[in-house]
Image (cartoon, rainbow, N blue to C red):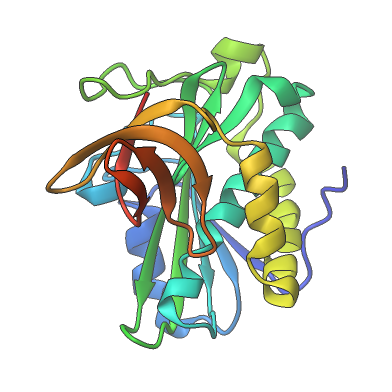
Length: 247
């Protein structure tokens, strides 16, 4: 698989940063095109819903800043392309496609444990001016603490024996993501949705989705054309736009 840096994308490697997402928010208004921001050390990384993201040395922490033109609900679908890009990058470095799976909405699993997470943040309100796609990967170490019931964190090194630096991983990930970005712009969400579903964890099985106010258990039926999780429950078919999923 080619690791040529994608045309039109810039990269910024920082020895230390509070958070690549925070840096992206600061830099976004000054950027003229897509740019990857890689932090070799993060002092205040964060995940979804404001959770702290533990980032041991040698792990991957990067944010891609884009300038999308679609409505916010379409812009948000890029998380699925980012998930697919991570899946392909993992396969490229490990040669083990069957070891990885995609967990709705934004995680990548390795041998059933969480090896990577994605966080999207947008600026601009009803018209998104900048999108930040934050990606954290346990390349070398997995954090020891996890919330009750959540998937156990694992690292690429511990599960596969593969050792790769953050810079090397970015060199592989960036061109793969650029390919999915081009596909998304050209053909829309449908082909990405179909490919994502072919790699989805627990499709057709019973899972639990926890929203801010509710807990819903049902059979994971599909992801619809808006990116919603669709569960078949005792109360009927339900489309869930945002939740944490538990197995």
